[in-house]
Image: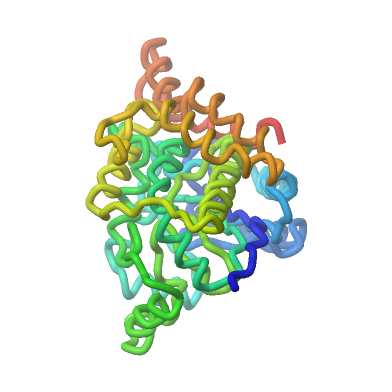
Length: 377
């Protein structure tokens, strides 16, 4: 008999570290910065692949509200430490004007191995993300829910977008991070697996053949965590404002709860081809929440706000049970004011209209990101 999931939550976020004077990324971590961050956060921080990045991870949390409290403290603590060095953190999936070919990767064995294996594609990996773990202890159930929740990953991406700029250019995409990350192997949508043993059988071929060391090198949009009994969602950009990221986590948790509830009634979400799901991923990547996604059930495009009205009805019972109604209600706020990508682009255009040159406008975008990252904590 399937064990009911705990639906516990853990959130990982990656931040860029910028120089407050130049607004550019730091080329290297100042001596002692990581150690100070580790001390103040009690070990809940670690370096990332690029030396201009840092990652935080919350403890296992029994609720979304508990996870928010942990994440708010981590953002504040890390920002406090870096501020002592004349730096700041920004929570965005790309930096508005930093050059990837001027960055250096962290001097650790695993990063040297990664750089050697992936060469040019990983040298461009100047992107940050947000990963949400939800506790699904039963292994077969973890795979079943992974197969079904794929449908909603484009919707979550659309709501999260924070990477419109790359190397100082407006890419025309709301999530350019998705394009950069997709150049790596073993990314994108996972295959559909029959059960846990089917998944392990496929993963074992890659491990046993020496292609990968372990399943942490499966960088899909969603995956069974190799380290924890969780289903890890990795498809979204990182939200700039903390509460927008918490909304994404709450939606993901509630969607899994909804799918589990359906399963208890011998019902399940209809599966659609990867071809169709990829089309919605592309639309979310391109337009964020400002346009439409395909409703496969009716075979037509629907505005993202209309789709989220339907999703909120689907998960209403679950949001009540998980005590996340308030967090999920913030979907309306995101849709009304725009995602981080929308707001970055609007701020840039306003600065240009006010007489700023492009570099000045991009610096203004960084200033917005610095402020928004620690607002309302």
